Picture 1: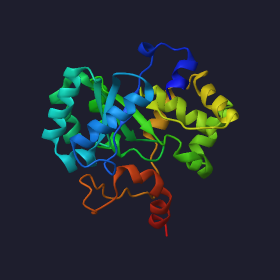
Picture 2 (picture 1 turned 120 degrees about the vertical axis):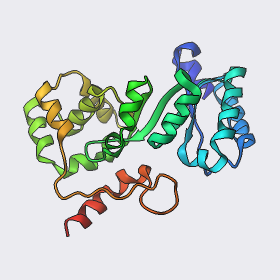
Picture 3 (picture 1 turned 90 degrees about the vertical axis):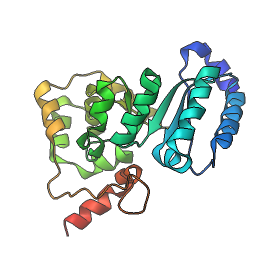
Length: 247
């Protein structure tokens, strides 16, 4: 990775690098520290811009221990910010009360069909306090477009853009940052061209107000107790849930 960064010719100060810690890879803060040191060696840097924790890891280790550990990293200059993944509103508020403007971003599930984070007021709270909403699976790995929802088909024809481009443009219009993975050059080009046009306000409102007839969202398992569906799995399970709602 050091070679890739050097080859890019971009100064380290102009890069923003986040280290995401996963709950199945660590058991305690010492494990997190080791993983951070390995990552810093890998990128040839003495700091990351943000260290990111998922809700299940905070529940596993405890908010108090994560708080003390992260504060130490901030004081030592090992990280500039901290971020969260899949937090519920209560945790987002707690974490924000601790770290204030050092809470950089919240990684969350959001797309045309899955809007639970918006419904629970999570995206609004983040936006109100300058916490970046970073959206994963914004296109549900092309599964949204394959459903040909009438509104997306209509707007695709109107703006002469693909359904995926309509979705990405709409998500960015909300101030969210979509994470898009692709190794296909034509898909990368398509994604970049999602932002060279403007969707009319009335059409943005229709996208914002869209509701799926016959879809009943499942109970969200925020505490990973097994009672419901964890928010990160909802984009993958949407098709199955929607089909079961309509049989």
